[in-house]
Length: 188
Image (spheres, rainbow, N blue to C red):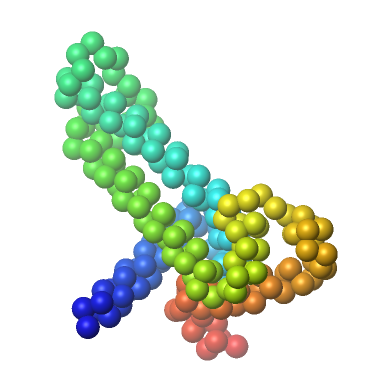
């Protein structure tokens, strides 16, 4: 009984994170706002590794802000004050609370992005057969294969690869964007 509640809680948590992260990804230019949910899902898959790598940039921002905190608090005397990063983020470089708040905001953003990407991968794993999971791993998640590389490897046509991709995307975009999916159905 408790496991069922945890599962329901986990799904609703992931769904709430999806909405927040999608807004952030649109704001950061990773995905377009004006496309339908099917195309948005394909765009997320195409940029999966790039989005995952963007969290490394967040780590660098956090590290630079932590240096600012150290210089403000005097934890490392003689250390040059690195005010550029705090100022470039619109924070007063002597505002300890502002810098600390921005660090927490960046850490939260990173956790949300990683949770979102893990959720996308789990949706693919749950909705694809073994061959299609391998296809998605090669195209989007781990390797750097192109559709042509997979066609050459398997001996099938590109239309077959795209059909297999679309079959899985059709299954997962409904779970990824349930509200938008319902809106699209009502507007048809």
